[in-house]
Image (cartoon, rainbow over all chains, first blue to last red; front, side, top):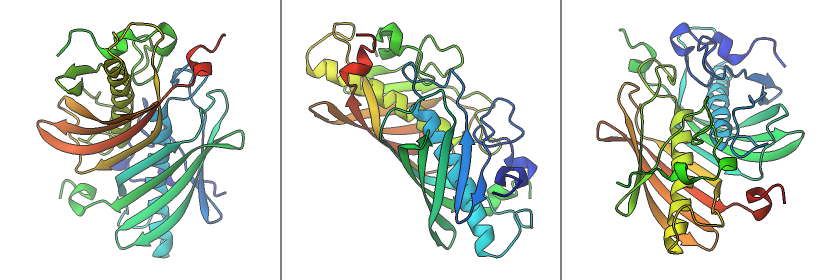
Length: 158
Length: 158
């Protein structure tokens, strides 16, 4: 596992995302890393991230899968170009579609592990598949189609 | 539109959901209503529910679609049985799968409208389709398959 998370390389204007922005003090501030050819994110839900007592809210699960997948898509795009994460111009991805299958109730009192693999990199589009596990048990599966952000959003002031 | 929201009928143990629980002081506390044969939920994002500056975080969009859809599934199930929302036993639904297509960036400074229609009620399974709009423009489409909660979760202490 590398020492610095993907999200720590994001330029400042992309660092306020509620899911993964390191500068959003209200947000989840998730952190994603390479782990071989897969990517990994560990997240400890807060007690109030509940659905029914004892279990994690499905919207949080969707959020973790979403942000970890777009971060992973960016990491994969840099890798595919043989570029460092902090090289210019920045590559950022938006979610085109998100699919989550909830396989079983997810306990709230243990760290959750989101593990993603890059299924396909095709032009500006990256497809990312993932699992969300608690104590080694897969509780949800995700698939995100991420698309490279259009230039007018990457550099909104130009 | 009816005066009382679906979520205001939920029994106390189902009222702590981060997305829709009226008793979760940290959560979104969304409110859903019938509007003819469709259901509707209006939600004003907070400034910190951002993705990139000016736009709504996709995880929040997924969360709104998720909770509004499971609430709509419950409402549809009561209607299908000709029962009032507060009649016993309670009918509650879990998300089996969630799919969101993000069609365009969603502005953060206006109220969002989630509008759902019941596509199918089949046994314990309800399929709900939805749109999320800002200022009358559809920014996302959702489909949720909701499944009636197993009895051991509805009455966990028995």
